[in-house]
Length: 85
Image 1 (cartoon, rainbow, N blue to C red):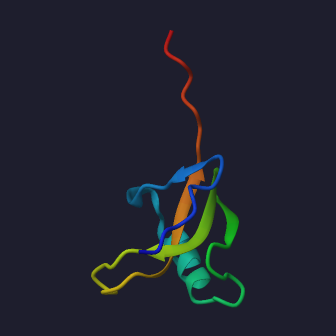
Image 2 (cartoon, helix red, strand yellow):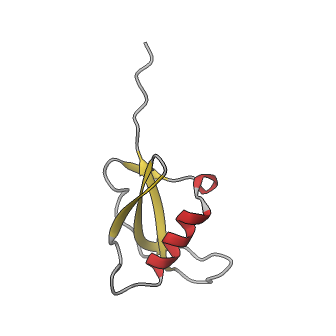
């Protein structure tokens, strides 16, 4: 089994419902450029007020790929919640 590095420091996994069509287009461009974006490379882009980090990682089998495959995962900044007093 292939594993990915831990989440990038300061970021958390972006929920699928938050991913916009523009973010998807960007991720697909990264996926199709392995020379510029080798495995585990990262890049950041701002979408409106949100800074999104993309990392090339191993993805599990899915409806399009029946084996572990190269994919792009999107992360958003982790904003710690204030402590409850």
